[in-house]
Structures are given as C-alpha cells and as structure tokens.
Image 1 (cartoon, rainbow, N blue to C red):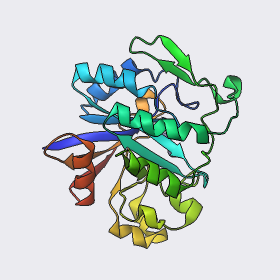
Image 2 (cartoon, protein in one colour):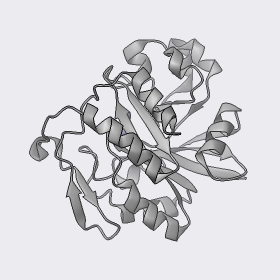
Image 3 (tube, protein in one colour):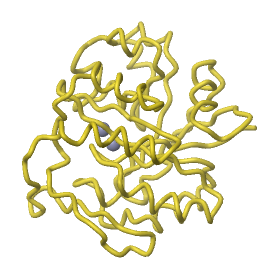
Image 4 (cartoon, rainbow, N blue to C red):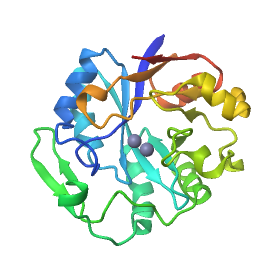
Length: 244
Ligand SMILES: [Zn+2]
Ligand SMILES: [Zn+2]
C-alpha cells in the first residue's frame, strides 16, 4: 500500500515550536491532510510524543517516537523509534550529554511537556536549543544500539545541515536515507552535491506551526506501517516526495 508520512514534526516542547503545537492540534491537522504516519521530533527531547501517540492511536494515525538531535558538529539528525521503552532508554544515555545550561523562556520560548488534554505536566529546564556533547558517530551508534533509525535533517540547509557543515557524508551515514528541506530545489542541490544522486532523498515538513504540517511529506510503498518498512521503501526507491 501507498502511505503518506511526515516524519519531522515539532511540538510545544521545542523552544522554537509554536504554543499551538499541542497533541490535539497536531493530530487534527494530520487528519485533515489524510497523512497515515507522523513522527514527533523535538530538539534534543522526546517527551511530548507520548500524548501525540495517545491521540493518534484513537484517530487512526500512526505516530512514531522521535527526536531531532543536534550533535557537537551542529548537525541536526532525526532519530526515530517504534517503541517507547527503547527511545526512553536511548534518551537516558543522551540527556547527560545535553549541556547544563538553563533555558531562558523569555528569550528562547517555553519548553513544555503536556498530556493529551493539554495540561502542562512538566517543563524541561535545560536549554534544548543546544548541541549535545556527542559526535555524529557517537549519536548514530547509540541510536543503532537501541534499535532506532537515523535520518540526517535538511542536509542542504545552511543552518544545522549535514552538508553545509561537513561538505560530505561521514562513513557512518553512508547507508542512511537523507532528508532535504521542505522547500528544497533538487536541481540546485544536485548542482552543489552531485554525489547525492545515489542517495534516497525524502522530505518532511519540519513543522513548528500547525499550518506547516504536511507542507512537504513523502509517500512510501509499504506492506505494513512501521519504520523498518518505511526505511526499506526509501532505500529501494519506492517513495515519492510531495511538496505543497
Ligand atoms: Zn533541524
Ligand atoms: Zn526540525
């Protein structure tokens, strides 16, 4: 079957995420767009995915647990998991590598954890808009150790993109699929980085506001809606990027 998936969505927990990015608002927008699967990927944190998953399950939307990690090289990488226990264990190894710098909500925005009814149930005190004290290699190894999947985010983007920081794909990501920005221009990208033609290049919305959701997403040919199948479909070229 052909499914529509947007695997890069932020919530109110991301300091730059809109206050309107509540679990309820996210799922209602996802339903309106008829997306089959999404991943919640807040900056260096995981906790709001639970409430989105709870609502998504009732509404027939598959929700994957994720995080958008920022490595020491200032590169953003999506880390996606199927199973809550696994991402929780993974995150317990990540969190100590998040610098002990307190968030200033007035400057960066609040970092709020909510339940499905939009009750505030927690707040992240450490600033999430920061680089983990982990290299790309160390991060990827941890993701694989816990059975997750990696997709470098918006690799061609000037800020926090893999290629604009490193100008090449490090060995540990050679077999990875790659995300290009929601508004990326493939022709331009291939002009700068011709070697990318051999990679599977998917897109997601990287939504920080409800209206952003689905501004780009990817269709995958899968037999079941799970990350393994989605990743496999991407690797085998059984995907199509849709941009609004
Ligand atoms: Zn990013
Ligand atoms: Zn993002």
